[in-house]
Every structure is written in structure tokens, then in C-alpha cells.
Length: 153
Image (cartoon, rainbow, N blue to C red; front, side):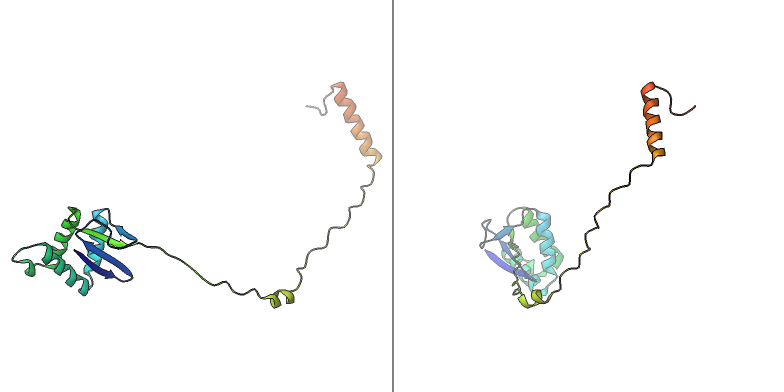
């Protein structure tokens, strides 16, 4: 037996058969997830009415009509946990599609060219070092070659 319930855009199916009721149906494997889904379904009056009918069909007891909603839910959750009742959800697949706008050639033609910085001017050759700098460099080279310290300690 199968019962179809709706929770907003979601379609849920309670079934006494383990087989998928429709293509793309996903079985709630864990009983806590199924219990949460049943609890959410019970907030809607039409769904609660359907859950009561399911309960009356599954539980053959003289006082099933007088049960509180919480007891009905608890017994249905127990049936799901005992694997006598299965809860399926329609598979969630999201396909986002949108149309690409037509390329607007006119806007591209009217666009201004990007302003770029002019290339840096060609670097001028460096002037030759002064004779004082050359003399100091030569003195340091000679001191390094002879092993003399560069500075006093």
C-alpha cells in the first residue's frame, strides 16, 4: 500500500513495500531522518488526516480513532524504525537553465579604447664613475687581495 503526501514542493510516499514507488524516489535510510520528515508532515492538517488514515489501516485496534496526534506519529515512526513502513522522497535534482543574452555588437563598436600608460622612456646611459670612486674601489680590491682588514676593530 502507498500513500502520497506533500510538504510544500516535496512529494513524500509512505509505503509498506520497500521497492521505489516511482522513478527517482529516494528511500530515507535512517529512521531519524524519516521521523523528522513525518513530524514536519504532521504540521499540515491534510497531511495529519492522511497520517491518521494510514495509522488506522496499519494498526488494527479498537481505539485507533481516539489516539492523540503525538501517539499516531510515534507509532508510525516506530513502524518506520521497524522497517514495516518505508518513507520515500522524490529525488532532488536541480537544473538551472537560463538564456544567454544576444551579443550586442553595437555596444562593442562604440566602446572607447582603453587608455594605457605610454612606455617608459628609454633609459639614458649612466655616466662613467668619478675618479674618486674608481680609486676607492681599487684600494678595496688591493686590501682584499693582501688580506688586510677593511676596517679597524
